[in-house]
Image (cartoon, rainbow, N blue to C red):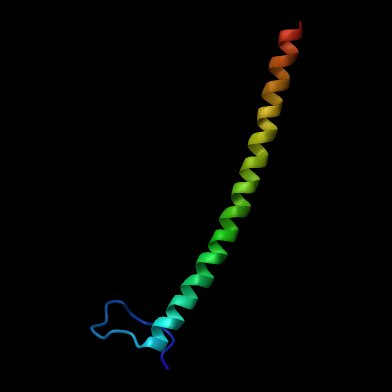
Amino acid sequence: MKSSYNFLSDKEPTDKQLQKLMQDVLVDVKKRSQIAKKKLEVIQLQEIKEAKIRFNKRFSLDAI
């Protein structure tokens, strides 16, 4: 069985090809989702740190 399908082909994929294609897409989407989630967490933690620094600077200046 051919493990890939070309969307430019005039033929429709077989049910097995379509199922394999959808499984491959699902795996890829889950992998990309995990990568994006990790990147977002890193960005969020950095933003929280920067916000705390800004808050502490403002609070320190107000106390003077």
